[in-house]
Image (cartoon, rainbow, N blue to C red; front, side):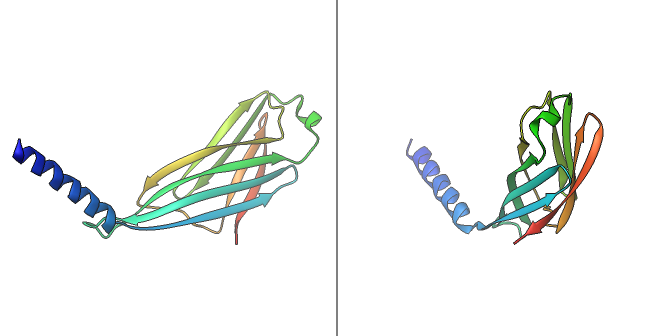
Length: 141
């Protein structure tokens, strides 16, 4: 029993040591853009860290994309489906909404790994019943 207690205490100390040695940096990238009918905002919150046993930088990323329709909501009354998508070097995402009747659309995302995209600009594509509109979003700040 004594040896079990010592082993548990040692493991707890090693866990605390591991957490202290991890180096962490956090930052936020905000991208905005506008097209004829849409405003787009893309926010990514990044946590950058290295593990004590490895010099490789790893990333934990979460955020959201927000699309705002600039026109009159009555213009969306005949639309059956709205789709949006984006593609970046580190991946992509998107969503679909049936029978859209709101001004704001979007969603949250998260991923982790050894690569992050901090490019200055990329495209978001919004499609209303197949009619596509491209929004170039650029990093601000």
